[in-house]
Length: 59
Image 1 (cartoon, rainbow, N blue to C red):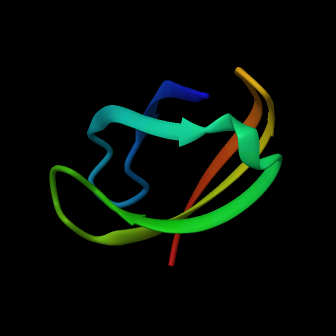
Image 2 (spheres, one colour):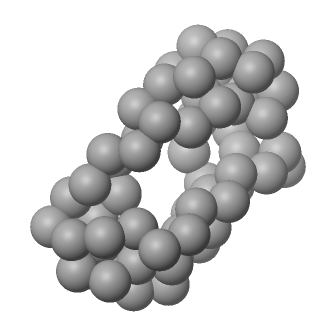
């Protein structure tokens, strides 16, 4: 199940929606900012249908 969360880019500070597949449990992945296009790391701890914690850090 996918859940969207509003996050802020660690580089430009702009907010945008990030969609996370919550069926994966603990996840660590890299994605690009929709505004400035710089890559950053996302760490998400999930249960099906719920994001328990979400951390965004610059690479």
